[in-house]
Amino acid sequence: MPEVGRFPKMAALQKFRALALGYPVEEAEAIGIAQATKYAIFKNLHVYGRRRRREAAAWARRGRPLDLEKYATFQLAALDGRPFVGGRTFSAEDYRRALFLRYGEETARRIEAWAEDLVKATPREVLEDERKFFRYVWLPHRDDPV
Image (cartoon, rainbow, N blue to C red; front, side, top):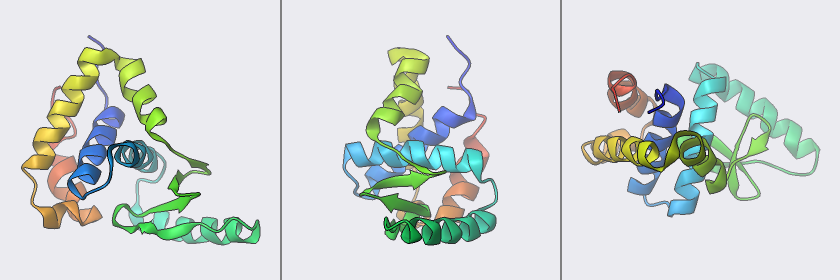
């Protein structure tokens, strides 16, 4: 079995967080992979916030304004109704490639089961707050074996 790093764990956790907050499966998977990408690119949220505003202004000048409200809970922008990070949009297909194609069906299902159990045990107020989720769910469990 391949060793599971933090990236797929974050993607799965964010998927199940989005599902718990009422997003449909396809959108939750897109959010999951976008969030994992965001954390890989922008480790410091206050720096990311400034960059997100600059990026939104640049896209608006191109005539394609970013929606900063659609995924505000996740501190993600949206472009054409999809999560947008690092100059690209993300879909459920990106999530599936990152987990299922890379790790295989069995390992990906175990990653998802681990994430789903953690999210089920998390109070809604933590799920709704990016910093609390990071502090109380991600940090203590990011290195858990899957």
